[in-house]
Length: 243
Image (cartoon, rainbow, N blue to C red):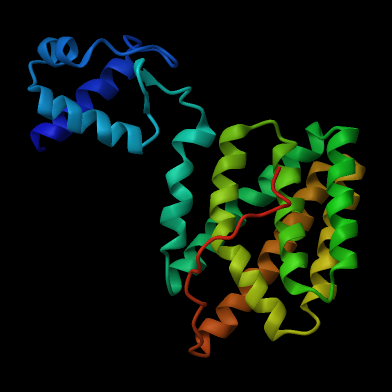
């Protein structure tokens, strides 16, 4: 480990052991460097790295603070890593989604509120209206799943699936462009998921979600086997549907 890595590890250990709680202010740079036996330059580099990792935040004119350490904050970098995956690793990503999303949908069926259901239904209705607009349909597709997973009340699970689905979101767009009947099948699969959620039936919800993810995975495997490539990542555009 480099000296900077050791400094990062020491600060992280202080947080893990409760010496620095979420939202707490770090001692002044010179004091903390002295306590850890580090130079101020090393301490500064360590703090910069932890700011990038969203563990610390610098408040101009006030000092350096530990962030909330919320899952949505700490796992933010996962989405950027996922966007760099290429080739067969996209299939690995879809396999991970297949392991998580059906179980998460089953959990949502046991916790979903009437308000949550209304949001899911709204995005499904929008998908039906947008069946001839692949990009808009896909955005509502992502929003549909986001609303379902958010109904679990598990922020860590919701954050993980949000980032895992980033790459498969583009795959669904590609699938829609290449297969004229994809929109109809996609909407039918989402209707099955909604019906299971309305019934508050976790087993049915898990089965419906698994069927949906399997459809995407099977399509990807068939096209990659034929030598086709998943389109390269494009610059992310603001999503007006994200809430």
